Amino acid sequence: MEAELPGQNDSAAPPGDGDHRPHRKGAKVADVRRYGQPPGLKDRRNEEHWAGRLYMRALSPYFGWLALRLGFSPNQLTYLMMASGVIAGVVVSLPAPELWTAIGGAVLIQVYLLLDCVDGEVARYLRQTSVAGVFLDRIGHYLSEVSLLIGLGFMAQGGWKNGGWVELGLVAALGAALIKAETDNVVVARAKSGLAADPTGGDRALRPRSTGIALARQAASMLRFHRIIGAVELSLLILAAAVLDTVLGTETPAAVRVLTVAVAAVAVLQTLLHLVSILASRRLK
Image 1 (cartoon, rainbow, N blue to C red):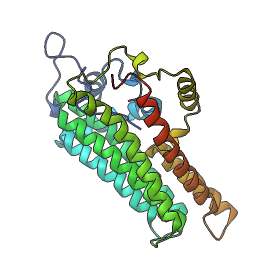
Image 2: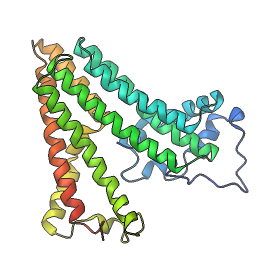
Image 3: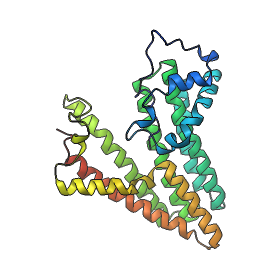
Image 4: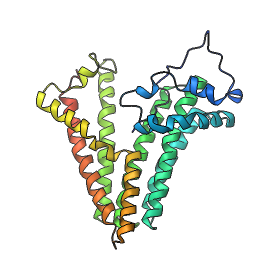
């Protein structure tokens, strides 16, 4: 999931004619929406989360206005985003009734998503986009997804104790981290080789040269099964599984355990498929 990368999109209107944004204390919600959500923001492929487009971008300017009034910097908001995501994983792992921990985790992930929108909007409003902001945002996504997957493993285990379910959650967390590392290391490899960050050819460069691999990649993209290891989707699935276990009244968290197996399988499979897709494409050329 990536709702916003603060510092990456600096397409807000540059200083000049028509750009008379008020000081942060005098900003209005409409100002935050105008300068913090430039045209095309919601249409960014692979960056704007569906939940951002669906509802969070409608709410975030109100909280961006509040953050400006309270004096928060973009990076401070990103740190709060990190904390929300990590704490969500901790809450899910708590040895307490799973329905309540699942609700707590889902709420905290919504806060995480909100802050993920707000930090970038505030950065653009203040013209404080930065490379450090992009870096912190990426780390925040890593930490949040890994924490939530580990928390799911403990929930499936039934509390803070060792066991195979915890290890399965760790496998899923490792897979989720590796998928992001594979993506990020394309940029690293190109930079170390003196190439531009983005390969020439646009979307064509992302497609595998092998027809078979390209079709498999397209099928996987259409099914979108990889989304179940994203923080927003996973938090909702954990909540649904917890509700099902509560309704069925099972002695063990059966639905949560099925979900844990599913996310571990998807994480491992997606790690391998993503690696093959990168190597078979023109991204490293």
